[in-house]
Image 1: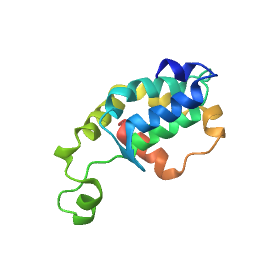
Image 2: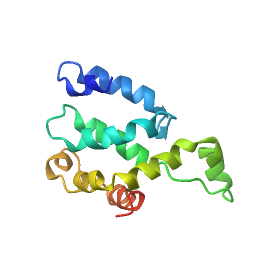
Image 3: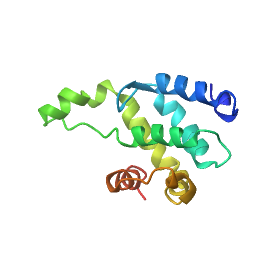
Image 4: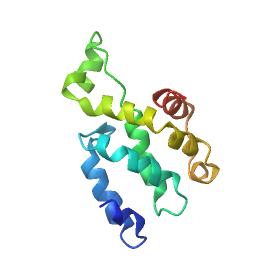
Length: 131
């Protein structure tokens, strides 16, 4: 599937399939996201990768998957306990480990020209990567 992301003819289908694999719902990452995230960061940062703006959207979904507050009943109802979702912590660790790729994404005017980041998305990427 990851190789399909590099092929202009297969990228649309590969991107759609990847979304099904790494997402468990709207803005809810699945268990596979943490394994794929380092590759997504690199692919989204490469101007030669077809559909990289869609891959960047998946990166944003992972960045927005914040830890849930166990004292907040709404947070718990929506996100569930952290121990039930280790992928969120693993993704946060991947963002820190690969912060140089996050920085490249944030500095990529070509990528961001397709749709500027909202301030909260930019702040979230800075925070999760500890920039």
